[in-house]
Image (tube, rainbow, N blue to C red; front, side):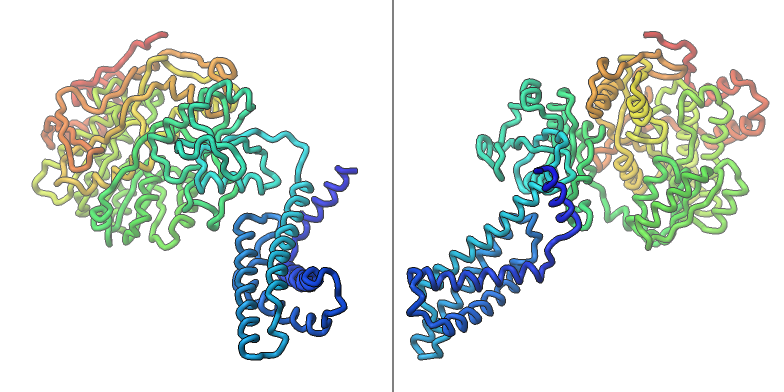
Length: 633
């Protein structure tokens, strides 16, 4: 019987809602009816001395005044089923304003002898105003209660606790309670403000973070932790996540106000926290004016534009509306997706996506000749260490040969700035990929020593970026989704990490620093153990490492280091005005010597056996020592 009533009521609420005009009509009916009731109450239910026609005429006046203020305060505009305290305020403001006007008219009519219609007993006005507030409030509460009864479901909801009892926390709490499809049941708030702890906010208790223990989560059956603080500091957010991640609960984050859909938050907007949130990195402060001036009215070419770094550089560049953006990549499908993304991101940006291989000089020459770029961001490269270790010829052809082509064309067509994206694997390299990138660094630096050119050559060097194509994060996520095991080469292996957006922001700023020839090294923070990343990703998935998901150690792969470095042996670190960017001062290499050596290798590249090619690279990079033994666990 009850379930049948619920079902019918739910269908009614699902298909229909009271239109505003009907709510207004109901409210006016309540006002009119309450006025007559007030008359009867005033005269103790003795209606014989009443003038019925006089009371009816006065009721019309009361209706007109109330209608005016209902329209002013829009007390009928909200959805009755989602009545909040603000709707109650509107009713009170409407009634108080109408009462004040009717009081004034009554007093003026008594002083000036106006028509009796304006002379309403003050006691009746007071009784009426109180009755109106009570009835309108009760009407809304009844509809809201009936709606919650109709939409209450029998499915099990997950107990959730909200971190933050301020405005954002209250918004999230009301959002969850007002969404019939929500799978959450709020159990309370967590807040660091001692003035709020131990009290109740919007009907729920507020606890301190000290209560967050395994016992608390088990006793209260908490399965979801929601962060609901606007503009929370990265280090604070990291600290909060780390304090609950070990309890195996789902951790959700509330997006900032500017990302809410049409200015409104939806339960679907609550997203799982990312591994980036556990880096705790402070936001980068850029010299936006300098970057904007440097990019203004410029034609900018980005190679490797469909890759992780190149595509983010492209996104960042659209903010500055350059004269034209030329995006070159040999990968057709990723280039298509980049084009579609940029259409939505900034339709006003003038850009062109071109399919092209940086190693094909004639193709690149055609692009440079046609578009005459003034700034080049060279991000095209092969980067996967294990794959390049068994394909050294391709690594040299693309990474070194491609860089030389783009650098030569930049000089030929008078490019102002050439910015190359390098990697920390170029530091004291032990693998083919790192060695080729080190050769690129030396080559670009050699170009910068030429005095007969106007092109400014700059190199940027940073470590791993979270979420890039082929990086460890997507791999771990896929392994976790498949039920494990998560494979790690060595329990002690560490890497530097930063997010793709912050790496690309620093690339843009470094492009307009100095006079050329510098290798700018980005502050990557502290190195992170890959094992810790695996543990955190498993826990962020609501699972327990080595219980739900096994971790398997595979041994270091050929060319792989236990740890990465940001500066080579003998390199001197120099500061810049940006604390997140330093300069690696390297030994200069003669331009003629290195270019002749590279050209000679490229000219007979596939005639060289792998061992001979590695020897040639070692001659250019004395610090390169190919690692042939794989460390076992």
